[in-house]
Length: 450
Image (tube, rainbow, N blue to C red; front, top):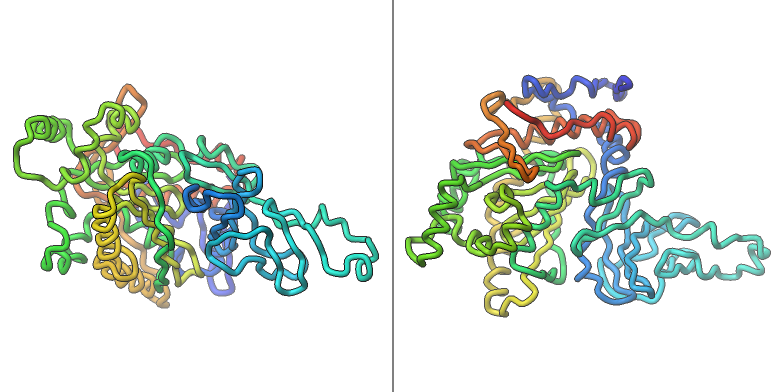
């Protein structure tokens, strides 16, 4: 592996040593260094499979939805053949955007600067005064919109700008696929119109880190307990399960032990007992088909999946992208969905909870955003940024359990295994110059003691 040192005018960060997986100590300058951020855009977002949209958001020919891969804006559009394309939203003439709307329907994309017109597959259709001004010397086949590689998994559209990336199915692995499968336990889903968007003064990695963090809940979200929005049993269970996958994917949070699962199954079958925190989410997992889809460990997990680098799946029927906007700002996108056949009254109840728990007006998101922004500010100070961060909770104290199916998990109490795996994987992405190097040198999910 080549030496990986990122140098700025005022400092240099040795990526080989910025995080020590043996001690759980992290160099916090990775949250504030501009050169590190620029490398993240190239080495992580520019190479990863990035979630773009759900197929239900662009069901017909001409439907489009705009998103970002890092700071590159892209257009997901269904063309006349029914295929989904993801195109760089930048005209090759002067770089102007060719689509200004967030979503809609169109027959082509028109650049408002000089009038270049592009088809739904990105090909250049027409150029004003081509004969007179270009003297018929413009090869339009060479000047279409840049097209990303596109693949889907069960209706979820992903794109990558790196032609050497592995297939999406391989990239996700069983852990990434499990994170998506968890959204499908109620059957087919449909995404609701619009995306809740807001910006926070934080580094994107703090927002990703937090989804594995069940240590902060009783402290940060005490107000939500007091007003009765959520219960402490639901938000801060001691039984935890962490599932780690290749390339940084992970699931961390509540999980039922075999004993508690057996207790639930018995109560559910008898229709007896007071509801417990997991009952609202667990009853549909009694279906044998669902258990087969999720797997013998996966169906007992109620944690938060993160599909690396920045896609969080919640159990409020929402997905969240943490889109980087520089080292000190992140744009938060909340996608809301419901089961395709859910009655309208229940859909409205779901939407109410989505609006009041996460998103710009959500109780929990406002608490978290304050913490992330102040943590980011701490990474900017002349003295504070030189002090390392502690990620040692549970380090070396737990063990990975393996199932004959190939699934594995760490069943324990509140911990920081997910955070450590995220930063270890982040370092490996940043060290690798190519996908070939990343595939050869990335860590496999841990075995034994962790």
